[in-house]
Length: 224
Image (tube, rainbow, N blue to C red):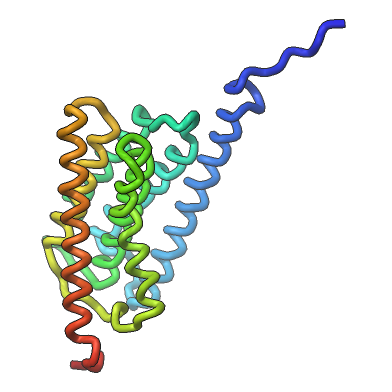
């Protein structure tokens, strides 16, 4: 009696198919969560519809969700550069576009917050495959925003509103470009590693400056 053929790992029912389903699930659930958060944020801000810059940011957020699905869908521990790199490039390009649009149209505190959270999502997503190639330390920049938010539950003074600062965009753009470069072999490994170190250092400096600003004002009332 012949034994039934065992399907290869990437065949029907194998890891590739399971990973594909999980990637679609992560991307879809993430997109729905973003849409719900945007609707809630707009209601709380009193806006009746998203501003033009918000629509660009929403597109970036959806690309970030798609990128997260691609990362989850990766198999054998290999960075899914072929699918992830185009998403990263488009999202990073739109980051400059929504800033240009925001400066020329109306913008709101919600839009600024939405933009920052979208940046954090993309950096976290891209840091996962980069960490596989360059080491777990790359994840520090990816989790920085979420660690800052979690710390706010323990120290309420960290939840105070921060003043606008263009340097935050410089730091996130630098790290985003370095993470996108880590998906390819266009640059020498040492150059990409140096870019990741520089981007991570800028992220650390940016968060450190914000924490210092908030700490100096921790005893002030919100109205002051």
